[in-house]
Amino acid sequence: MYSVMKCGVKLQPRCLVVTYVEMATKKLRCRQMPLRNFKETSNISQYAEELKKNQRHRTLLSDISQLQLEKMLLVVQGHMKGLSLEESVEQAESDLTIDPDKDLNKLETEQVDKAKRIMDETFNQHRIKADDPEFEYNVEVEFQQPIESSGWDSDDEF
Amino acid sequence: MSKPEDKLKIICLGDSAVGKSKMVERFLMDGYKPQQLSTYALTLFDYETKINGKMVPIEFWDTAGQERFASMHPSYYHQAQACILVFDATRKITYKNLTNWYRELRKYRPNIPCLLVANKIDADLGVTQRSFQFGKKHSLPQYFVSAADGTNIVKLFRDTIKAAYAYKQNPTDYVDQVLAELGNFESGKLDENDEAIFKLTSKEDQAEEF
Image (cartoon, rainbow over all chains, first blue to last red; front, side, top):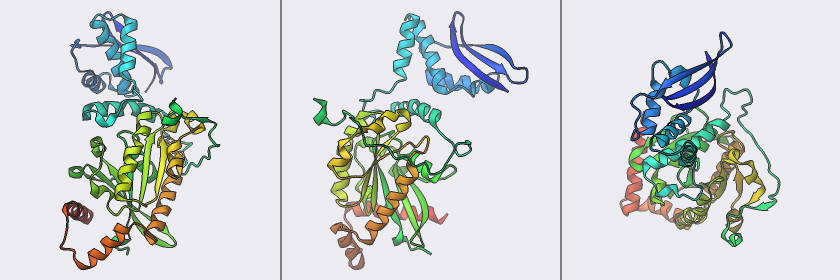
């Protein structure tokens, strides 16, 4: 069994780097996974999916979300396209952030699915499942009267 | 045994990815297998609960991408007794689009109870301290919920069921009453929308047999 600590990338040679604790020995370890045949034009989500299925790495990668892998791969791809490391990190971040003003009703299925995957990340982080010790079926919270305006009503936009 | 006409129909409405399905799933809990009617871009969740000592079947209607056309087929609204209208508390556009959803709802169902929901409060608890005028403007009760951690989900659904039940006991939509009477006399006369509903109903019936 492993406990994953961190996930990152190395640009030379290109590989995914995962640090983890091996539970049996309590030793901190680091694994480098070469990004074979990864190209400037590679489809990011497909490549990330394949990585997750890789026989040698899948146990370790099962604790890392598809989205995080995609982010790492985007950084590498950005760098391959000639961006600086900073620029490609910035681009990867904005690519995987939802614009709150974007109308998802107007996007293609593929783009909506991508947006849903990004939002699922937050959902899963905050999710309390039925088998979690703190789970309660009926959670009722009464909130205080609002203290400020949302600013979302056109009247108070001005 | 409950008769099909005892069934309550509750519809979920709102933009893509506001969390409508996840809310229903959280209320019904894991392992629930809904009927997917992909031809109609619909997901139906069957549920049963006791009201005043009597078992009442309930059907939750959820969209499966149909909202991308920014409008629902009229059969979606047909004979619904309550509506859960949802926006995503982290995305302003979904709040802005409430106006269109609400307008469409009222076109078909002028009087059914509608409950307004701000979902995803887990992503930003601060929203629960902010005021949203939409609910006040249309006199809709508003709920702050999270399908992820479960906050107020069960309360929302129980309140909706109660409202739907009360509405069914005393419907005020003129169209409903007319349709009920028409059903008694001339079921042969169907307009285009009714035919679509008819198809939909027969498809459901088939699915229920298994």
